[in-house]
Image (cartoon, rainbow, N blue to C red; front, side, top):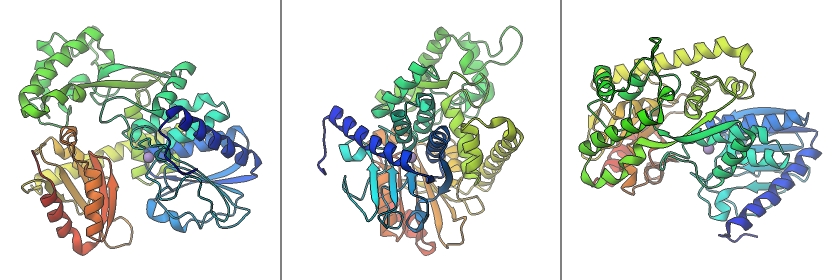
Length: 474
Ligand SMILES: [Mn+2]
């Protein structure tokens, strides 16, 4: 079977057939090796797979790896499962003889045809085989949950939501779509996830409302980085910034009525700030679904899916993937201090990096893009820093940051971030960066509004110039 099947029901059934085959492989295995990606989706996928095997009491190890490491991986266990990676890589090494079995659960574009066999047994499950776009219909962790589902482990469904949000699958429309909605309905049925229409302010449970508002949006507003202005703005809307007991209020404390007033006022303000062609997209920037884990305490980093994904990303970007996995698997008590220190250090590091770039005035503005040399910033966070800089500069141009790679290899890690509004113009920056990085002897890709590449040391200037000349702004 290699043809693309557009009938959703049939596609879903075929995927389930493969998930059941994978289930049999797992039940037959004495020991299993899991490889997963190092980002939030990958860490969550690894946590789901590990939770499945824990429940089945099957011995296993979990390893978090980068894309460029995949082709040289090796194991001696009966079964290997690779998640959030593998579709785009040569798997013959992990599936080299008749006693080896490999399950690939990836949502990235596949290089093999559906049903390809290698020397060992290969089960590859990928939404793209069925014409379903893996960048918003399901994540690596989502596929891992669908595997958990054939064992009836519905209690892991919330992790599928965490991985989808961590993978920004809801970023363009503000809500989860495709197979993600199946996971969402499982999760609401079990009662571990609640979702509602909400304002898209980051920090629903942990950032005082007026501060959340000062960071709002990927375009520059009169409110941007101006806490006093935000306090005035809320006062004028008759939205108290403190409750009767004098403690500060968070977005999660607002009534629907208050949220409605805030939505209308933000809509007016943003409509004034953006060029006319973007006006119709503005509501999508302000409102969308929020996802909450009902079993987590309110006012913590773990209640809101998007805040939770920040914690997991902080672990991943500091090379502490196993810590992120322990958090997700619920072994939080033993690691609480370590985790708090890590997130604190991470926040401080980001703030320092941001200040350094701003104080040294190192953002260069070209015709169609803006960029900075982020040498000295860890390559794992250069994209986060770029995103934080965006609304302080010209939000109508994508911003690109680069820094030497953390590893010994010579070359630059490049990250691009842009306002969602630019993506609504129809240019997919992830695809553009993929093409241009290839021309420069590197590799790259990613989402439309957040993507990256590896570029050989001598070609960074060529990359910047090619990108600048390929972007045509409206
Ligand atoms: Mn992913």
